[in-house]
Length: 70
Image (cartoon, rainbow, N blue to C red):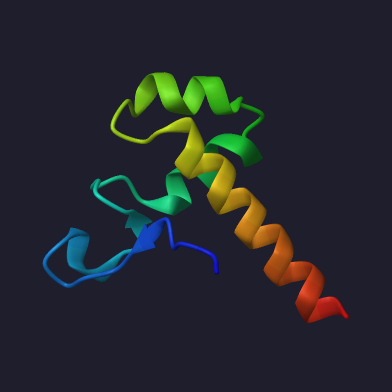
């Protein structure tokens, strides 16, 4: 079973999806990647997010997209 690396709660960032245990919105990672920045750049700017969380998030996103396309 996949462990969610994302949490949403009205008490944290008004319900914006964030990396679990942080106040870092998942959208921030996507913005970094879309802008041509690397995962290392993102992690340097947001040390409260672990590399494992980023990799798990990307793997879960990939799996959901592939499943939806099947």
